[in-house]
Amino acid sequence: MIRVLIADDQELVRGGLAALLSLESDIKVVAEVGRGDLVAAAAEEHRPDVVLLDIEMPGMSGLEVAERLRGHRVVIVTTFGRPGYLRRALDAGAAGFVVKDAPAAELAGAVRRVMAGERVIDPKLATSAREVGPSPLTPREREVLRAAGDGSTVADIAAGLFLTEGTVRNYLSSAIGKTGARNRAEAVHVALSRGWL
Image (cartoon, rainbow, N blue to C red; front, side, top):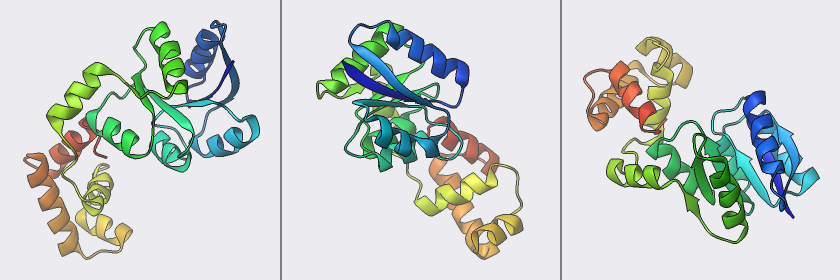
């Protein structure tokens, strides 16, 4: 019996995944959580064989959780099939990456394959990730772009990140160039759509 923990902040999705996997004779859902910061404790308590993680959750993202759960079999199950997310998930040690619009049988198959030691990646997303390539942004450029995403002024970003306004402008300029954008709003959009933020 393959023991599975499901972490997704949307209760309907989490319950749906649990119901679908529970129909499989060799899979048992042993825990469900709705926040990323609750996963480690649930994993410690329930000892799952495979952990299914959504990317965007309150408390801690699925990518951050995957990093903390190195050594566990982790499968990212997400709506956000972005190439940058795939690359970051694999770098964090995830054994699989499946998009939520995949057929239910594919998810159960992914759980079994990961349990058998295989790596499972959505084929369309793998192709897209090869085409897009790795993120060209430095960690600091990502941080500044993320802060710019809500329309904050350069002065607000500088104060929030403890940088000078000139430094913020330099990071924004560099990020705009690297994303091929015309302005910072477009750079944020490009970086988000590719999973770089």
